[in-house]
Length: 142
Image 1: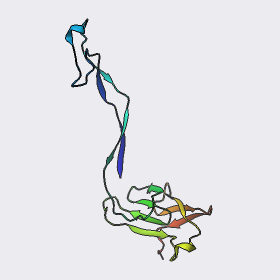
Image 2 (image 1 turned 180 degrees about the horizontal axis):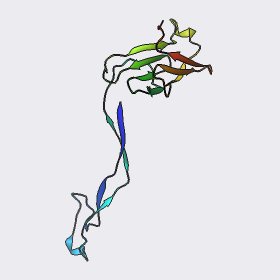
Image 3 (image 1 turned 180 degrees about the vertical axis):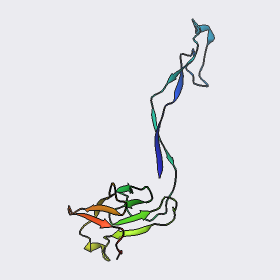
Image 4 (image 1 turned 30 degrees about the vertical axis):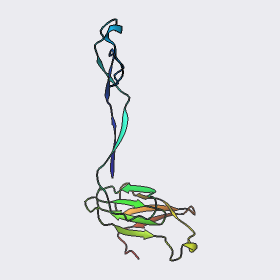
């Protein structure tokens, strides 16, 4: 998991030299002394790694969804949906897999997954065939 945030920096403006070290600077060519000022810079988007989870996915992750109670989150790629607990970074529960034994038999992929906004035991996922499935985590997984 990453923390993405906006940082506003500052830079120095209004100095007599170009500010680069190693360039020739002749004080005799300066007509007036300028006092440096701190000027706000354009905001910069930064990303910081907060937690690293085990490499469970074989393909690019296409969806992340947090449960309404904040206890778990789902991650899904083209073939598998995993259920994670934020404090257990090394293991996940494979909730659903559409991966066939022979990849030549693959006829649909998972496009997205999403927890229900009020019920943390329900989630939905859609497939490349345009189907949407509603699943209950309380039922036995096969």
